[in-house]
Image 1 (cartoon, one colour):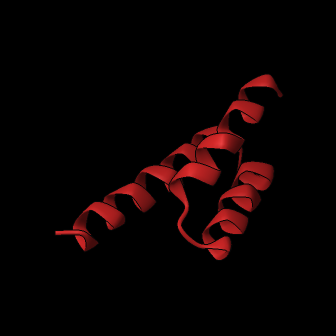
Image 2 (tube, one colour):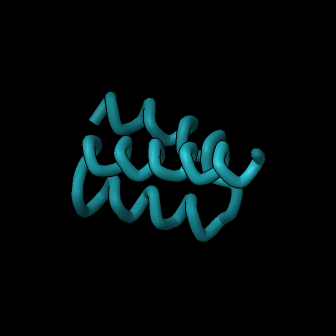
Length: 52
């Protein structure tokens, strides 16, 4: 559980919309930490592509 708590500030930092935050938390709860990290990486990639 400790690792999951470390992910929550990262979710807040990375996600730009409340919908993304809810989605990330939902993935964390139902699918686990690894799936949540993967989702956050995909969000970061989309943001970097959008900013170009």
